[in-house]
Length: 68
View: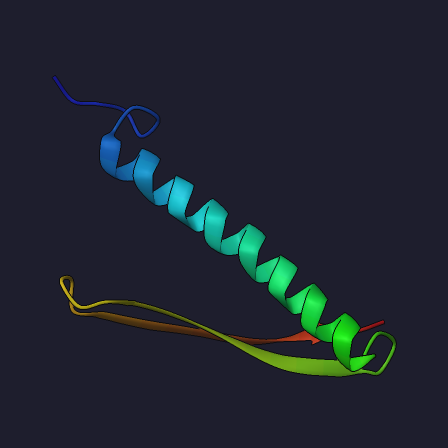
């Protein structure tokens, strides 16, 4: 019997990890912007790096955030 995405342990675990990455990353960016007084100061470049030695993974996502 094949499990669907919502009950497959791999997908459930991955979604939980990605939610944690998203929430904690947003909090860290907001804190850094606040501490440096950057709100309303144009744009900043950000980079996220996801690695896994076991899977031979090195994934980089780069982008910009508009500070308003």
